[in-house]
Image (cartoon, rainbow, N blue to C red; front, side, top):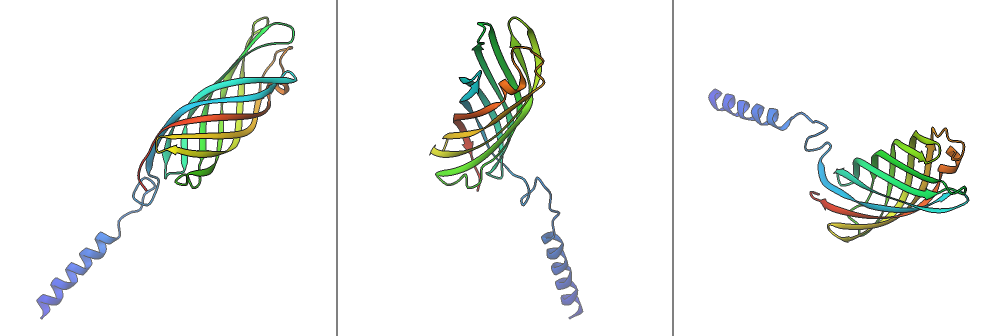
Length: 186
C-alpha cells in the first residue's frame, strides 16, 4: 500500500509541476506575433491657406490581432506662394491599435513619430520632427486587403525657414489608406 501511495504522490507531484509553467510576455498567454501589413496612404492637408496632397507608405508587424508596430514615410511636394519649390519628407516609427479588427468594420488609432527633412529650394534643407496622431475607420474587404478613412493632425517642429514655419507645416489632415497583408491566429 505504501508503494502505491508513493507512486501516486510522485505522479501527482509531476503533473502539478508540469501544469505550473512560467508565463512570459512572448509566450502562450503574452504577446503573440499575428500578422504583417503594408500599404500606401494619401492625405489631403492644409498648406499655405489652401490644401495639398501628401503620400506615403507603411510597413507594420501585428501583435495579438490588434497592436501594430512598424514604420511609415510621407512625402509632399508643393510650390510656395512666391513660386519657390518646397518638399517635405518624413520617416517615422508607427504605433497602431485596431480593436475589433476581426469585425468587417472597425475603428483604429495610429500615431507616428519621427524625423524628416524640409527642403525650400531658395533656402536649403532643414531637419524637422513630425508627430502625427490619427483615428479612423477600417473596412475588411478581403482577408488580405483593408481600406480605411482616417483623420488627424500633423505636428511639425524644428523648421527654421523664413518662408515656411512650423505653424504652416502643422495642419489637420484627412486620408485614405490601403492596407495589404495577412493576419493569422485567433
